[in-house]
Amino acid sequence: MNSLWFFDDVNLFKLLCPHKFKNYKKDHSFDAYKKQDYIYFEQDFANKIYLIEKGKVKIGYYNEDGVEVVKAILTRGELFGETAILGDDKREEFAQSIDNTTSICPVGVDAMHNLMRDNQTFTFKVYKIIGFRLKKLERRLQLLLFKDAKTRLLEFLHELCTDYGYDCDKTGDRVVHHPYTQKDIASLIGTSRPTLNILLNELKEESVLDYTRKEIRIYKKTA
Image (cartoon, rainbow, N blue to C red; front, side, top):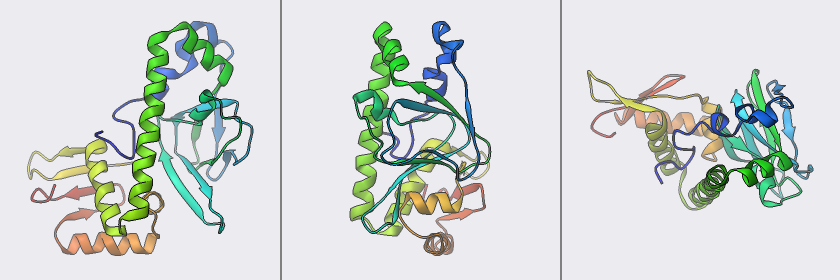
């Protein structure tokens, strides 16, 4: 599996959005959300899946101590709420916009089942997507449980290189332009933002990387 944290170069919005299907286009609309708006809460009725046209969405839950646990931060082209297709009738996590211009394509479960019934290739892709999501979530939780913060950060940086990186023609360094804030990254690897800053500065001092707000440069000798 090339990617742990994100889908491999797949824009699910382009693949699954009902706008692509003539019979569903006329009844289809988009929902707009501002930063900190909730798309759904834990225990809400699960009757839709959602595709991100633009913006960012945080998926998470609260543990027994009331501490927020972030399962994923998703961006343009990605899907969430997909377990409703498998028969889950209640949400086991919340979904929250963390961008002021988030646009979501909601798809009713019945409409999705109709699309799947009418197109075997489409059905295969949907189940493949769900399978990838579950495997990556399982692997991510293993990292959070059994690896220290620095190891989790290094694993995450490796995945950023895979998903967003390219080789600099002049230096051979791996350059990563990504859509995540330091707060996003800290949430995803299960640490605090101050701890993340300390770890990034340590890696910078060790000449492993350099970073700015939207770019991380992994030096050639370590990429």
